[in-house]
Length: 243
Ligand SMILES: C[S@@+](CC[C@H](N)C(=O)[O-])C[C@H]1O[C@@H](n2cnc3c(N)ncnc32)[C@H](O)[C@@H]1O
Image 1 (cartoon, rainbow, N blue to C red):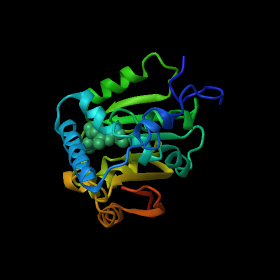
Image 2 (cartoon, helix red, strand yellow):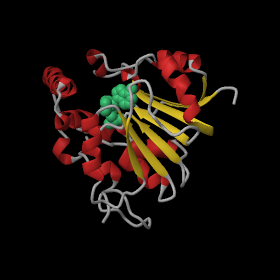
Image 3 (spheres, rainbow, N blue to C red):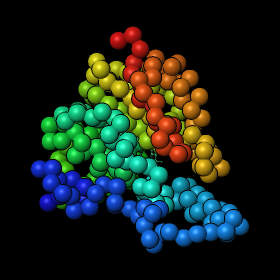
């Protein structure tokens, strides 16, 4: 058995990872709006997004994390390529949610590697466990974290990827300073977060890029790479200073 987008021997996958959800350029989504209609549509989309985000319902939250044509703007294949992942790497998907990136990281690290799907939300972890059950994915370990500690193995992580989660974390300089002990000697932390462009600013779910850079510097990190190909998220890779 295999999950969508994963082929054990590198063959053609049943469904490419980026095709798990509709894209903007798909014919069914190709609709032209006049400016007034567009504003109304954005307002409606905002409302539709806000309801699942504040909802206690796991399936609605999953919709908020993965729906709304995410593949058209998330560019997950390009993101995964930019992360420089090697087979055998141990990666933590910090704030994994429904596993949008976990299921894409799993084939990238291969059978010798491991993905730690870390979240504080028991229900989302359960959802991800069900999503992976019965697939060939054997390299994902799901961790129920504490809000102040991801509970990762000490010095055991080559890459922490945290997507749309940074703004949820409290006392971020302290949190990421402690996280340094979980990193392998050449370990890196990649942060992708809404940065205030597009409508996420209205919901308050974002971190200005200058705040991200300042806080990570306070936490003891320096920038390795900064990418600007995402249209609503910062994407910066850090490593610990003085190691
Ligand atoms: C907006 S979702 C993003 C999910 C996923 N990374 C994605 O891109 O679809 C944010 C997730 O971060 C989790 N979260 C919030 N604070 C956290 C913390 N301190 N440690 C780990 N996960 C956290 C939430 O439970 C939620 O599942």
